[in-house]
Image 1 (tube, one colour):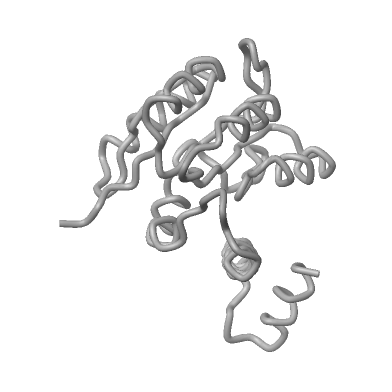
Image 2 (tube, rainbow, N blue to C red; image 1 turned 135 degrees about the horizontal axis):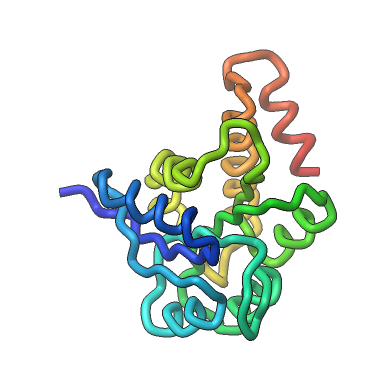
Length: 179
């Protein structure tokens, strides 16, 4: 029996939240371990149960009122295993994306991209499920493990852009992004 990917959904947009819930109910190997419409509830949930992955809307309401504050609180929890964090956002600001990466975000998706739908984030996590399981992100990662994870993350982003790993220059692009 295959292990299910447990996802915590943090989304305050009701139609988008409901679309993701409906989509996950219809697929195998992925389940919503929890659903929160604000950061406060999400922090309370994570204190009791650590999901494999989090889908986090960048623009939230509540005491932590945005994903960046939520991420900073999450780091202070010193979890034994850090969930894979995927952020969705209406913002296209590159400085914001750079900052959220520094706060521990593993991947981000712009809701404004033409092929985005509420289901896209779940499909992406399902696609990389085995990577999430095989490379647990712990607080005590070595530099070698971090480098390997970065190579995987950049490779996944290049894949989403339609880059073929067999094409000339693919490894160069990954190495250049690491630097």
